[in-house]
Image 1 (cartoon, rainbow, N blue to C red):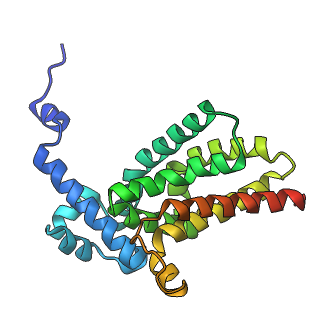
Image 2 (image 1 turned 135 degrees about the horizontal axis):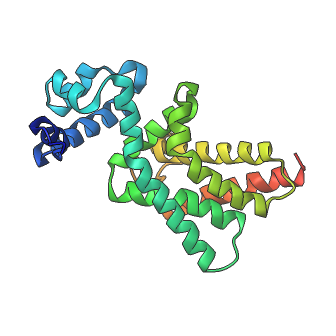
Length: 228
């Protein structure tokens, strides 16, 4: 009979609460630093300082910089994807789907999460980094593409005259607009009329989200009208 070696038991031991808390601090710090400085501008030393941990602890809990970036993006993606899928199911259960309702189910959950937890505004900047840089195509494929494909399938039913490429293009334009609203409230305030309501970084008023959804749905409709 094969006996279990003591070292095997040690390797299988679940992380302690202290180790889990340290890992969360490291990922929180990585999220903030990557959001503020981008991947290339951030350093492990910056992240360690932000977390209040030694550099060695950051390496232990997060690995190298690229792996740490991957973990920081992946960490919230599951919650975001589930919130979007739940919103789509709720929309489907409440009546016939439209372009506006599908886009609303995709976009509004991000704003709802940011309303409850301001750190989601930092996460939105990480998503923007992943979306804009082909280096992170693998991260996008893992963390975001399965849910994007689900929504694109619904949009294909609602805009059947569009080619797959044109639907994807309109969807990416819509995602860019969503991320802009999540990260650029200050810019809206600077360009808007005096007294423009500014709900704060990462947040949006219900009216702003309504405007965003209508704007993006109109983009799909224009594409369909042009049969492009």
